Image 1 (cartoon, one colour):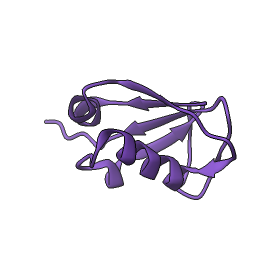
Image 2 (spheres, helix red, strand yellow):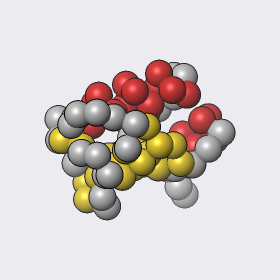
Image 3 (cartoon, helix red, strand yellow):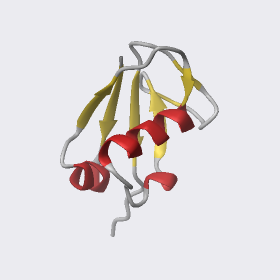
Image 4 (cartoon, helix red, strand yellow):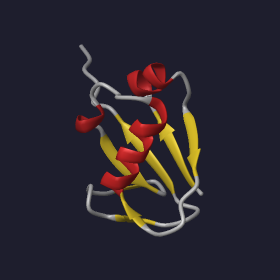
Length: 79
């Protein structure tokens, strides 16, 4: 099971902040992103999100294992 955390606009689009997806083999972050979009539909802006696994920033090619938590953090603008 991989736990996914969505923040800000991504959580609003998905209508949830947390999603769990069952997996049977290690994946990379890009594959998790694809599974997430298959689960909740296309999320606008997810391609620009910062990525973290277990609270450490990662790249799309980094591995995700059973029990990990993947966070998708969209860029924010402020003023």
